[in-house]
Length: 243
Image (cartoon, rainbow, N blue to C red; front, top):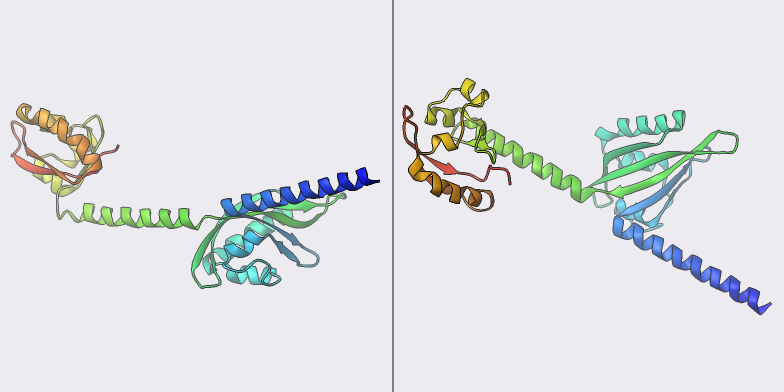
């Protein structure tokens, strides 16, 4: 009898250890599990789902209506469409959407939704996982905004700006830059504008030394650029070259 009790105690310890490991995995990955029963409307969340919404674990019993109200308005229709599709077709769905946290800040969620199907093949509910992707989405938004600001500066033609490849081909340039070097947009689009061909022989070596620095440091002066028939101008080297 004592052996059976010891075996049972050992199994209970192993189960508790697995639960602890699972909780740690969810915490580190910011990944939580949820389940939704269609008939009762009951929603079950793991601790990480509560924290995703800025709530203390098991602070209250969540409802579907509460969830919908927590989703940012511009994503509610998409979320409902994804849920309806999962219930109707039984096919797994994924979605990214923004939510309003308890402190009124915005969080971003990636969710995987799959149908819960009973022995008779009927869909009884939904279940899945949700991950906090706020850091990634905020970085993506900041990157897009930065690119938009750069593009506005590029298109404003306040200064001459261009993009060049590692093979010294100028891939894109604004009108101000093209005017400075005396090339047309058609010549640029035809691939006829190359950085190395704009560089006189007496400055080629210096340019090759400075170009790598353009990718990782402050703008560098590459000195005078000219061709036989183009006017000589000084170009600043901006870190627009691909690494």
